[in-house]
Image (tube, rainbow, N blue to C red; front, side, top):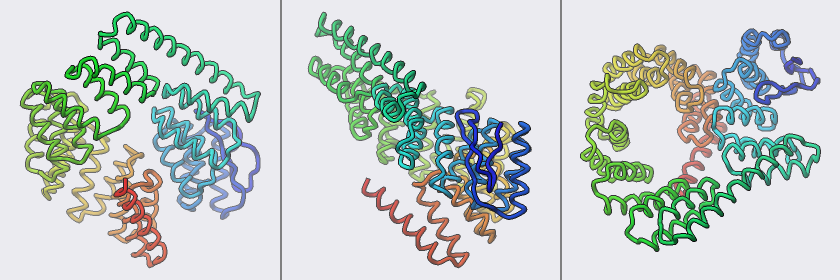
Length: 482
């Protein structure tokens, strides 16, 4: 491969796996930084990406605010297949240099690879704000829409790519495929319309048509068809089930909750409907109603493990810790009957509850048991770190926060809590880096800005602290308005 970009190197980079691109890194750093950068480039030329990653880690340690050093490290990690670690690196590089276009491209491609298409789309749109004449970016947007089955949106993106570059073969192929899929969808809709014409009183045929519209993300049409079902049978369960499905896919939490409330009034013995009602009441923030709905579901289906998890989580949100503790203990005791993921979640919930109750020694014991059963479980490390933190065992806490991040490098909360503990032990530079990484992973995480404010205050950087505080307040105000 061509050389990864070093300070002063103006050669053009090449594509890497997933369509990643090397970034240009003009300018010159320190002699030590240049030495490790050269070693990283040499290792990359030889295809030794592990050695390249080690070299670029040295560059980052020497110059943690160098966006291109972060980028090169992320690129090496991407070559190694460490997608989530690479994503965290690209996010931090973008945070340090919002103009680093190739980082957006690589990040968007990686999001698509792991199925986070909404994040990919948002990333590509941000890149287009930097380079609105980039036909390849529009092709990436079209590809993302196509993976989301939003074929009409894909057509618009591919058209724009071809408007900018009529020879873009990828856009041509994508456009043709999207057109084929749209034609197929329209054909199925017409066939279903004919079936309705043959028997307009059959509500199930309307439901099939509504599902076709949902597949196309044509929510207004799906809602209209569902209303036709309600007109045919105003008290029909099928129509309300369809209505709930439409509102769920639209993300209309209040309408979804109200629809499930209607469903349980029509079918009070339907445990699944009560569970859905609990979910949407919880999303509304109405924990009391959510708890009531989950309790109804458990009364109807006492052996439902998912509902017990949901109820326990809602108890935690409501700070009813003893109630949550009872459920998590019950789940752990039934460990032989649980799937491995459920058992791990039960131990994590139990440790979390112990931490919430201030019973930190029991939290440590539970988290250690979780890690014995499931080594490298990120929540096991995180709950263990939280307990050690509360016990004032900061070295152990820091080690386990770092272990949690290594196991799940996309969790912004882990970085924030690590930053707060590093601040406690006056390791301010490391704390600053961790807090900034938390914000890079989740720019809406208010608590991370609050942690950043405290770090800047401890460092005597008054203006930076004020800026971070204002960002936290702005996010809080925006959330209240929303």
